[in-house]
Image (cartoon, rainbow, N blue to C red; front, side, top):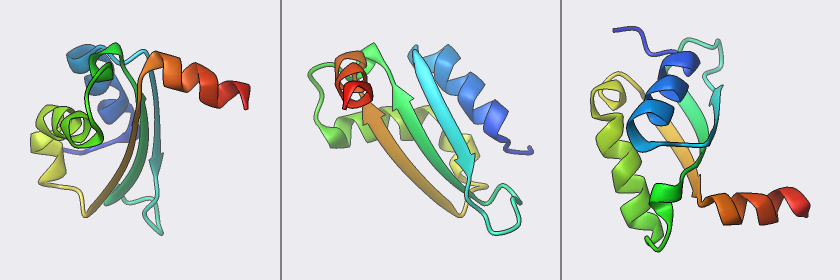
Length: 86
């Protein structure tokens, strides 16, 4: 399975109801081994950071087997709006 930025984005939107997803391939040669992801989802409401990351890791369990490094930032829609306003 080829892990692409589009694949990660689409899966997060479909499976965890993300309302905004930014995926960046941070591999030196863009070889899909390292990703940085920003995920905004109402599913994160009231959940601590570790629980949010577990939601994402569970969703992308198969993909993470192929990825060397995965950095994620998880926000609720309210947190995202506040961050955009700054």
